Each structure stands twice: as structure tokens, then as C-alpha cells.
Amino acid sequence: MSRFNVWWAACLILLGGLGCNARSQDLAEFDWDADTDEEADEQEGDADSEDGEDGDGESKEEDGESEDEASDGTHHGFVAISDPLSYYEHAKPIIDAKCASCHTEDGIGPMPLTSYDEVEPYVKLVEASVASGRMPPWTAEGPLDNFLGDRRLSFDQRRTLLSWLSQGAPEGDPEDEPEEKIDTTPRRLEDVDLRLELPIDYEPKVEPDDYHCFPIEWPEDETKYVTALDIVPGNRRIVHHAIIYYVRPGSADAVRERDAEEEGPGFECFGSNFGAPSVWLQSYEPGGYAQEVPGDLGFEIEPGSIMMLQLHYNTLTGSGTDRSAMEFKLEDKVDRVGRVSLIMQPAWIAGFMPIPANEPDVVHNYLALPRGADSPPREIFWADLHMHSLGTRGMIGIVRAERPGIVEPLLVIPEWDFAWQETYILREPVILNPLDRLYVECHFDNTADNQVMVDGERLPPRDVNWGDGTTDEMCLGNVLTAPIELGD
Ligand code: HEC
Image 1: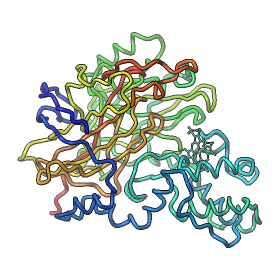
Image 2 (image 1 turned 135 degrees about the vertical axis):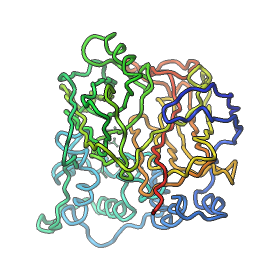
Image 3 (image 1 turned 30 degrees about the vertical axis):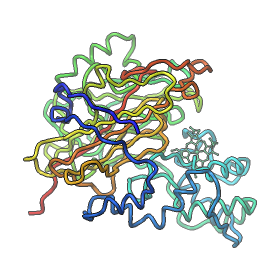
């Protein structure tokens, strides 16, 4: 077991106010092999029933099975349905609901899967991708009802689809399609108060993956609160994912300078360090949709700020130009202001996150005390994790003041995939009490087989440290919190 002796942190002013209170810790890393059920039981000694961990326990029965199967790529435990199934009656509604958001004519999926004629040539591939759990793409572990917008198939959906495939994927009669059609168009914001668009039709310059940041001036001249936001991809074939970062007025000049250094609007940017602190507000993944800020919260945005749209284009799935936009719903006042806090070791940035060449499993972890004993309890609404391409798995959790040494998972990503990082919004907020700490853990594989491809060839392993480039690394968690709402 590797232990990471955390450095006494210099008091870096991190965005959410984390960092200054960070304490030196020596915490054994999260036990990845423990059966989640048992672990939940073990941790539930004092059964705090609202904190999401219990949610795990309850719905495990139903969802646990599909999880097991999905992760090891076999059909074990799969009992095929013997009644005759058909495309129209059984398979289409599931494919429409769970695949068509990406697999449409202009979507990011490599082929449309919206009709029998489109699906039929690919049945073998569809079977392999569903049986292995590769499709639909989704990286977070846990029960299906833990996060909003979980793309995975339910146990029944998966069983029905695989049974239909094992029966030879019969077409059946179009008349049998259920009356109620699935609406596959992405949900957009209804009332848009502000729309900020890329200043040009941008054509990706780097193939196949182009990462470009567009800093856009925030036009409001009074403080406003963003209560819902959306990223509207201009060209859904090539926009693989996108993130909105908020840059406060005090840091905006640094970003403007960075922008001016490169010709044309925006600049190449891979990570989340733009020479100035920024706050992650929203992410877009293919098939994604507009979101209200959870918990009826608002993000406070001051005049003179910058909204940065970071786009990851992938040109293997399409070509052309893109003019994506950000849309916002604004209020003058909100009851609760949301705060996005970073979970990271401040010393990492200064070069203290070594990942030596050829090491198969380098672990970096950190425990942060978000605020003092006198602060009121807070609710956590989402958890995010960010690494680059050497990352293999990672997690974010809470270490309760009364149970030091035990990590209560908030977000566990057993197979990190840079291409599918997103904002994991908890269906039920989790409570963070004063003196509870937040934990982040990242694993990296720096051997020859896990290197970035450049021009079709893998780079040789080299010593890696914290940094912003494609071949540097990061280990960064973030959570959205707000003071708990006390019923009065
Ligand atoms: C969130 C978007 C998204 C959803 C939802 C999705 N796919 Fe995909 N699919 C992709 C992308 C992107 C690829 C290209 C390969 C990659 O990036 O992994 C792909 C590739 C595939 C492939 C090609 C072979 C392979 O495994 O790469 C098949 C088959 C497939 N998807 C089937 C499905 C089916 C069946 C569903 C629904 C049960 C589904 N996909 C849902 C985005 C999606």
C-alpha cells in the first residue's frame, strides 16, 4: 500500500477557500477491492441515513447484478428471455432512450442507430459493446439512481436487449412499436437570459483531438446569479466535450493576456490551468442537456468576469467548423449561493506530484479540511474528478470527523477515461459536517503501454509531474456545496 505523506501546504488561496486549512495527513488509500456492500455495512455503524451511502445499500439488490456483469464483459448471470422479442416492440424503445442521443445522423456516435436498417448491420458490434458495458459510455461506479443523467442501461433494459440479440435480432412489425415515442432531442433551456457564442466559426487545427479555450467577456454590469446553464454544441459531430469555467474579475487580465499571445480568438488549452484561477461551472458530454444549478442554487458572477468555454473537438467522428454557445438563466438575487471548491494538494502545483517513468501504479491522494469548526454544515451537490491521460482510476470521498481513516465514497471511477469526464450531480445532496474532510485519490500508470499517441505512435514513458500539457498530469477534485438549508 502506498502512502503519500502530504506536505504542509503553503497557504494558497484556492477558489473555494480550501487549502489554507489543509492539514498534513497520512491516510491509507481507499480500499478498492472491498465489496461495496460490505464496506457500506462496515461504515454504517452509526447509520446516518441521509448521506447517500445508504442509498447505495438499498438499491444494491437491483442494480448490483448489472454492475458485475457490465464490468467484466461476460454474460455471466445473464438468463435470456425466452419469449419472442422484436425490434419494434422491445429493442427500439431502449435504443431510442439510451443510444440515439449520440447515435443519430449528426451525433458523436460513429453511426446512427435510429431505425432497423441502421441497427441491423451492426448487431454483432452492438452486442459486444452492450455485453462488455462499453456502451452507453459512463464511468462512475454505484447504483443507477445515485447520479442525475446516468446513461447506463438498467438490468431489465440490458437483459431485454441482449435477449433480443441472442434471438437473432428479429425485426417484427412496425405496428408493435409502443405508442409513446421517446423524445430523443436534447433538452435545452427554455428561458435564456443571456447567450454567449464563439466569436468565429472555429475549425479544429489539431487532429484528431483539438483542445481550445474561448474566453468570452461577461457583459452584465451588475452582479448576477446564474441559476441554469447550457452548452449548445454548434457541430455535434465534432464536439466531444466542453466545459464552462468562470474566471473572476481579478484574474481576468491574466486570461486576456494568454488569449492575446495566440493568433485568432482563444488559445490551445488542454487542462484546467489557464494561468489564472478558474471555477468549473458546467460540462457538456454528447447527449447531454441543459441543467438548472442543483439545489436551487445560483452561481454569483461579478461584472468584469470572463466565461471560458473549453472545447474538446474530435475529428475522427466528423469534420467542419463549430460555433458553440453558452446559455444562461440569470437572477438578481438567490437564497443560496453555490460554491465550487477544489480538492487538491496545493504543493502539487509546485512540482510535488511526481509520477516516475515506467511505474504502473503511482498514487497521489490528499485530505482537505474545507472550513473551520464553527462553520455550519453544508450540502454537497456534485463531485468531479479531473486527471489527464495517464490516469487509471480515482475517487472523491468524505472522511467524517468521527471516523478518521475511513473514506466514504462520493464518486468512484474504477476505469478513468479522459474522453468521458463530466459533472456527476448527486440525486440527493450529501451532508458535510464541520470538521469532516474531503478526500481525493488518483492513480496513474506511466508504463510504455499507457502513453499518449502522437502521430500514430506512443510516446516513450518519461518522468511526469503536475502541469497543463497533454503529457503532464493533474489530480483535481471539485465539489459544489452550499450551507445547509435549515427548515424554519
Ligand atoms: C453519450 C454518447 C453515446 C451513447 C449514449 C451511446 N454511444 Fe455508442 N458510441 C459513442 C461514441 C463516441 C463511440 C465511438 C467510440 C468511442 O468513443 O468510445 C461509440 C461507439 C459505438 C459502437 C462502435 C463499437 C464500439 O464499441 O466502439 C457501437 C456498436 C455502439 N457505440 C453502440 C451503442 C449502443 C448500442 C448504445 C446504447 C445502448 C450506445 N452506443 C450509446 C457514443 C455513445
